[in-house]
Image (cartoon, rainbow, N blue to C red; front, side):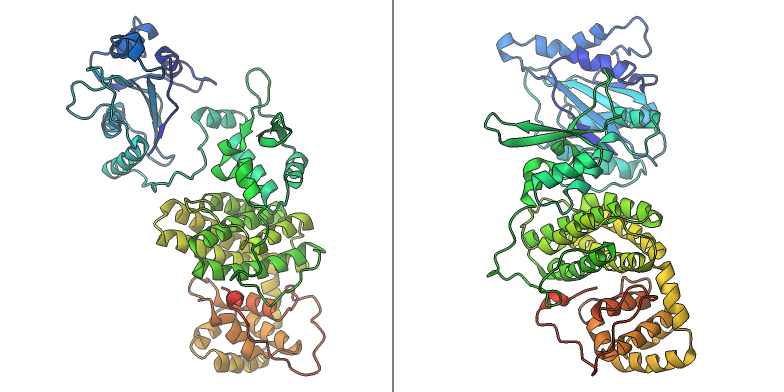
Length: 566
């Protein structure tokens, strides 16, 4: 149950005409009253003799009774209440009860108050109602509407329980604006999977992912085929922007533009500019990973994905132990990585990765203000992914995609846990949904490389040798790991690490030291990718291994906590 309080209006009859009319795109069917402040109020949908003016005069009588100097300029109150898509169709009587509860909860017409505001509830679709009211009470006073939005949400949660409807999570005011019913109907008519508002939000987020300047941001939008208007001050300073899809037009044949802030709270130009904050001061306590002290230019999709995997691994430390502002910045940057990954993914993983990024968008915002700077590694990763070009679905491109998704899954899960601890249910649920899409994408991306490793590790003699290594390094989890179907792939990877000159015992300890494996569907898969990353092995098993070192070199012990990973 989703209540929404709309902007106050000045003309009662204008809203009445809309509610009882056919709608912007004739989406209103059988408009009629389901409840009102008085049972004798004429129903324009059932009484052919009743007129718009009749209802307008009745609603406005308390307003007109005041001296002109005391009449509020904006006196038309409007609340819509929508059921979730999976909810059953409610009867008129049930919607009438819901309307009475809403006007009581918001302070417009408290139960038993005979001098309350006048109101009427109109139903013109199966899944929602609109409530119109005038904000002058019968006694000439104004209603007490303090925190009316929060009170309507609280009442909605009670209604869901009473009517056995889908239980929605209470938000914190940072969610993106939902598409209107007119936008949804328009999308259905044009056979769009998503409304233009949602498509534009996705396009703007992709354009902002890893962008470093206004020029890069607007250039990406233009190349994506989005129409862009910039709002410029007389001084020449850029104040804001609006965007539109070329094929989304109004009745006059003009493109329908949306400002960034109408797409999502963090997509206004000032908020996007915050992402370009200079890196954190080197004298601060920011943890810097010893793995890649200097990052050379990106040379291809596989290399960008491997570097993004390292950045994702490092980010887990901040989410686990960072201050709230730092964690909020990391989680926002995770959203940029997912947007960039979805935009450059191969066809067979694109749908799940796109859905993961779309779901995580809600988890990337909260009332905690992000402290920028410490998120530069993830933003650099998003930038690298965006500039590396589309990846192939096989070879090193496909295998490094699986490696990155594997690590991103645990990062998104960590974000879900952080939000849950802070009692942000909407964000936690969004992150959990994103994790499920990532899990599905991983199964697709990892099928070929894991199968190839499985074939290489199928020999019993090799498995016996590597089982001894596993039991010695990780005796507490060795037996469950050996029983997993993916053990041959891990055995092959352990053999590869030794062939490349590393000590597999130490690598195994390092791979499990700082990040629990409880969330892993396959512990062997997780260890495969961690070992291949730590040992700098090719992600694709078919690629040649690095030349064996002259002597076996142990993996250096981490000099900071930044090497903590999943």
